[in-house]
Image 1 (cartoon, rainbow, N blue to C red):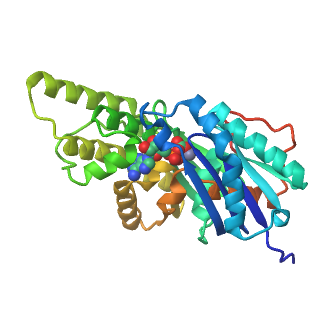
Image 2 (image 1 turned 30 degrees about the horizontal axis):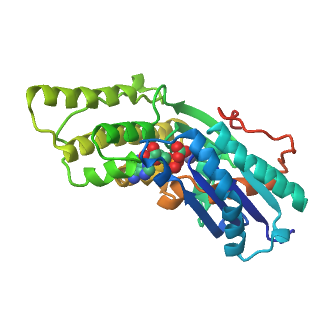
Image 3 (image 1 turned 90 degrees about the vertical axis):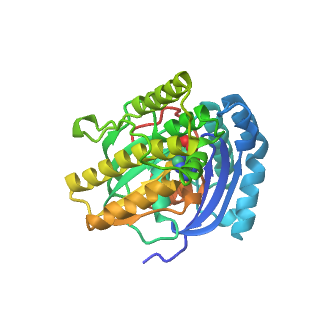
Length: 338
Ligand code: KG4
Ligand code: ZN
């Protein structure tokens, strides 16, 4: 039996976080460095792709050096370099991919290409003994997907959003409520002070399919705010935030439970930035308990973009020998996940 420890360096630059991390044997976190660009994009109310790429270029080598130093391993001791190559912003992805390629080439180490969503799902393995099979609800700024994760390398897509991603809806509603950027955390905080039953916003259940739609809900919030302004009715921001959040959380929870039922799954895992939402975590915990299901919730720091999840995913690709060549390119729309 091979008992050698495997050290994987993960690199993530798909959006507005420059991140690098080192994982041992896919599960043990040795370092997790995240340089967030939030302050840079704040004044524009969203991520400016060109600014994101330029900032990744400035910080990537500092970020990787820091991750290796904090992990307490020598560069030469790394077994593999794993990098996100899609989906994401093309210029941002290219910085990480180019850096990872030259780093791996210079050290003569294997390179692994990681799909960002499968990275998010792998956050469930960090510092935990959670294993497939399970239903994964991936909710982030760019994705709202339900997968049945049959094994580490076998994903079945069960449903996805037909328009906006859940995180996108949080960000847009936060903007119209004047709560600032990034919106998810602001709505989460404001909702704690509001009444979730104050307003009934529509929930798009999509004929019981496992697909999602959030654009109608976003319009309903806008219409409500316009109506208040026209009729002179007071807008209680906390109540709007709490009621909007309730609508999103109810749909996400219902569909995740429905997916588990349809697949006969015993476990559900959350992933992606919106998975750090306090109300979603509470509702999923309650729903899973009522249905006798196990729920795995990554720590919030592993829900939003990070490189530990990329290193973890890379570990499983390393084990199955799925390496990338130096012709590896960024794929902004992402390849199909196997
Ligand atoms: O996974 P992530 O960091 O980046 C993408 O891959 O998109 O997710 C970012 C998204 C943003 O839309 C942000 O508003 C949302 O996650 N988010 C939240 C919370 N924290 C971050 N949404 C709801 N509640 C939160 N606490
Ligand atoms: Zn992400």
